[in-house]
Length: 288
Image (cartoon, rainbow, N blue to C red; front, side, top):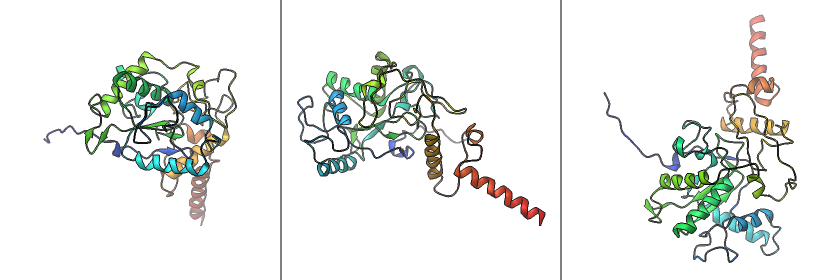
């Protein structure tokens, strides 16, 4: 009988993230609310400042040229390659370990959002005097939680050593973030905190998304979630999701669809049509 071994799984083993749109860095210094630092991506993470950056995305900020913005984005992406990732699904009480949850069930919360995680990092940094290095990517999604976009990269370890003695490792950070999320539960007004340029202002409460059979989708989602479209799931969103499933298969045909999705598509999607064509060819061969 083989001896069991316990191994720590690093973030490099995480599956590839699904890019809903091109992401960029919002943890850039530029106001007095951010702590001065030699590293341009080391900050205290003021969510209000990040909101201003969201509103000015796409180069609308007259103080930042398009060339400078793109350069900062490239620098942020390059500098954050070794950062540890945080996704809302890591703290989702509706998910199992196999479905993406990383914290213990007693530490999980309902309807976690990426912006709430940013606020948690700000609180932890302020209360424990930790100058976090963070990159916030609102359009990045975990492949097991496509409807709840948002990824936060945090530098926890560098060259195998903790960068701050108050945060021992990523699991310790998960616990600290979870404690904050439990003390500040998500509510229906939480998505309103992150208004993004290009999205119409929300004056009324957003109805919960329609959930296809076989999917787990949070009842509270960020305003830019692909699952929110007039209070239901749009045809365009479903087509985009099918494209993501096809790309996940490496272009070698359609991977197996989640339960309930095949009947919803009715064989009308690109992958379903290909499968139907194969069945007709087999019947023709039998007739011959």
